[in-house]
View (cartoon, helix red, strand yellow):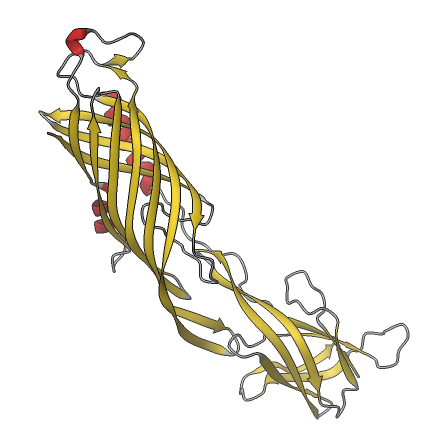
Length: 204
Length: 151
């Protein structure tokens, strides 16, 4: 591989690719998280390119986060969808060279359910009362910038990782009870999040 | 390839290096009540010889025969819009009623939710107490006085 500083020669022009990637990090993170499982979910990405420079993609997934704190428990769960494009930063050395370093951008959204199954009104003197806040569905939208790489470890089989910074554009929830986790985004309290993902992919 | 592998391991390690959740912030504030001599001009702070205070209907006392107190701090209820206290001074009981609002506000994942309370009204029996007044309706960390109690 080399950085793309010159035009690709005719011998290295490929016919494009179609690749399916499965997220490895969310299941691993869920397996090792607290008991009961604090975080669960999974994610799949479909990637298509005609010229191996621009990769158009769609990422779909489901996340569930169960946060149990001293005075409250909150559960966020729902699906998310990201649409975007990756641009290769590499110059390919041969027709068989599919390793890639890329930057990308996404527009993303999630429809999620927010519950507060347990909310304790705790006064050191007057005592505690537990209430339950009814669950409701909300919508969040955000954009992402991505830096990542995919390496062909076996023929047609890729390991990939990326880091992504996300900027929240819109979160519908305006109630007194905050959303502490948006599926696909993370904690929305600061309006930004940083995330990493590891994936395994297969090129068809 | 080695570069990508090393970067991958580094990022994986960073991802799990989460900071622990520690809450160093109070989630509730108490109503600060200061005693004054009735009719003094300028207002003079009044120290009670002994004072006992408890919530009406409660068995645990907030203050038990405390001497030379000129200020007391009282926790308001979170689930009711009024809190009643029995104040005993010189063996005479008065009942102080504080009406208030309570609203949640989110602090952090570690602290959870705090409570913003505002005093909306106040009443007191007049066995030994002469009168009461609200000086600051918001229960906040930096407020020095919420209620004036005149003896």
